[in-house]
Structures are given as structure tokens and as C-alpha cells.
Image (cartoon, rainbow, N blue to C red; front, side, top):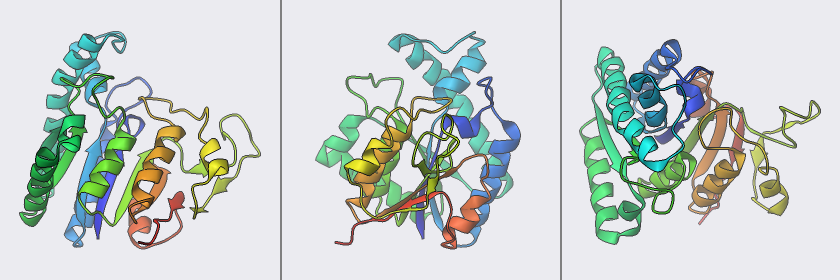
Length: 256
């Protein structure tokens, strides 16, 4: 199975914004094991700006675009160094790919991206993809890594997109505010009622929220790919996911 796994900032870091070392080590171990079992893994990883903030010793996340881009430039090095060291323990080679909206929208550049990914997978490497935050702006960028994960899943003909987040699925209401909210296990159709459930449900860290996850679901399910939102604090759930067990919320891809 070819699985695109999007890892949110909340999965990689503590609430302080600093790297959650134990969590990242556990995630890399499990993904390595899934590769050993024969699955092809493509990672879409957040965290570059957050790690740059920590590396630079900044007191808070920059709010201006040059500040964010500078933090990303520093943090991306730190992020990839961390992944390289941890996956090397399990004898897996990682590869970094940084994308902008133009790489997706331009037909030739998009074809080059696909060719590179497919060759990396043939060579047994584990591609790790992020938006190129050092050159992208809000006006020119993809915008969020949930959308990026969906674009990558479609572009690479993935069988499944998994969004690891600080919320373990789609609920009938915001579970942080409404104790009666119930998790929806399966979504067969993304109608207006389902889409409205994403309003106002944000993320504790990073820029994503349920709204961006539902937008990602629209992209992938429209291309026949299933998507799952799962609890990023429990990476071992990935084993259950590949075995088809009910985890988080599964959005069923439309059959073509």
C-alpha cells in the first residue's frame, strides 16, 4: 500500500513549541516498521517554522512573512537532520522535497515532481515533503499542509492519506467545547452538513484546523482516495489503519 502521512506541528512538538523527542522517535520507528512490511511511505511534515523558532532562540513565532521565512530556513535544516538521524537507525534513507504552488500548477514542473517521487520510491527511499516556506508567501503558497498532503496524495497515486493531528477525527460538534460531541467514524459523502462541522474547530498548534482537513478530504475523495484523520499522539494507530481497523474518521473516496 502507498500511504501519504501528513504529520502536524502538534504531533512533532510539545505545547512549548519545542521538539517532542520521544514522540518523533516513536513515529519514525513505526513508519520504518511499516516500510519493512512492504508499504511505501510518503511523509508530508510540518514543523519547520516551529523548529526554527526554537533553534534561533526566539520568544515567539514571527508574525511577519520575512520572519517566518527566516525561521523556516533554519528549522528545515534541523527538521531534516532529525529525520535523517532517526530513520538511519532503522536503515532507511530519507529524501527532502520542498514544493511551491507553482510546482503543482505548472504541468512540466508537476511532471518532474511525480517522476522524482516515483524514482525515490523505486530506490526504497522515504520522501519527506514540505512547502518551501522560505520562498512561498500567503499569496503565492499552497497555504497549509493538510492541502499539501492532499495534493501530494493525488499526485503520487497514493492509496490512502492519513492526517495525524491533535484531534482524533471529525465530531458532531467541537469536542473541546461540547462534551456531548460524538466522533463520526465514516463519512461517505461530503455534503454541506459535514462541511459545516469544520467551522471554528481549530488546532492547538500550527495553522491547520478541521476546515483545512475537510478541504483536503474533498480533494482526495474526489480522486478516489480514502482519507483518515487520526490522533497524532498515538502513532501506533498507524498499524491499525493499514490493517483496515476503524480508527479516527475515515472519508471514503468516490469510485471512478
